[in-house]
Image (tube, rainbow, N blue to C red; front, top):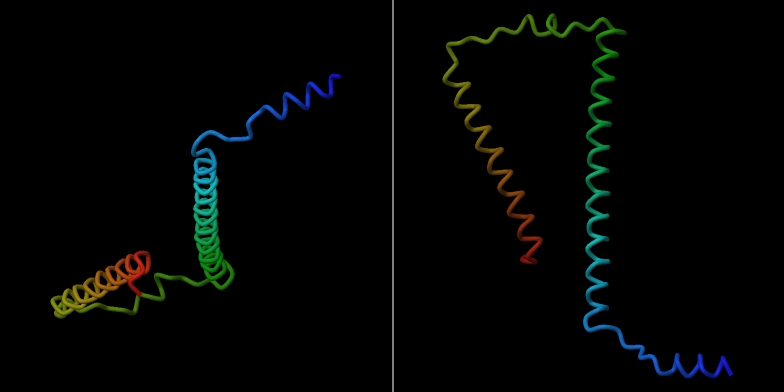
Length: 118
């Protein structure tokens, strides 16, 4: 008797979900997946930067303490003549322009790839 009442009650229940439930659930799942991928990317980028800095610091440590490598003595023979000061300014200006143009090229290529104009 109880089983028949339970079956009757379960059969009366509608299996319909509220409007837009599946879409909302899928959008939340996709949002969480995007957050996780962004978090993983930032973590991997942080690890790469940390390991690069550790390797550079290790190389400097080995050169200075094990090989008695003195950096100021290395560059003591280099003398910069100030009669070429305007020429150095021009070279730095050109180098700055090249870096700015390369950065803009990178940004525009990224935007074009995102919008699909490749």
